[in-house]
Length: 157
Image 1 (tube, rainbow, N blue to C red):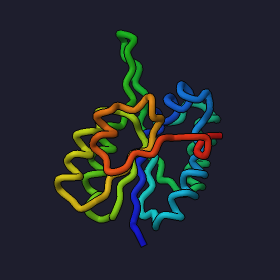
Image 2 (cartoon, one colour; image 1 turned 180 degrees about the vertical axis):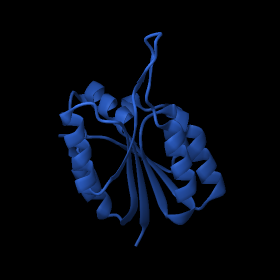
Image 3 (cartoon, helix red, strand yellow; image 1 turned 30 degrees about the horizontal axis):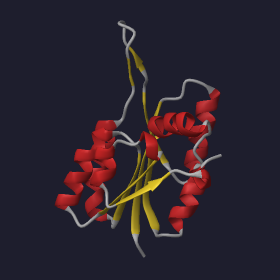
């Protein structure tokens, strides 16, 4: 059975699904689809620390589905800018886990991950797969993966 590892950039998926479809992403449907393709050995969702009950419930639901939820605080800087992305954390985890699985699946359209996928493709036999909103996905990212799956109605609430 194919061994899968799933990495979800929660903020990216939330905002691109809202912008692209005006709807939310269906994590349960994703997990169900992937279990038909193989054994999910790692499923990690990278999110911002919950600031309200809605976010707590959402992250609890992710855990119930089977995801490990990693959080970090949302930082509001004095100049008005904000920071809360997980790019480095996702990168470190993917580089560590890729050699131990058959396929890594990244849910993000962020072009910053193109170099990560290039590195995984060069250094391991691991198949790389990106799932994201097609029109909001960086071409450089979709060009670096073995498979690109656009989010469609089957993965939306």
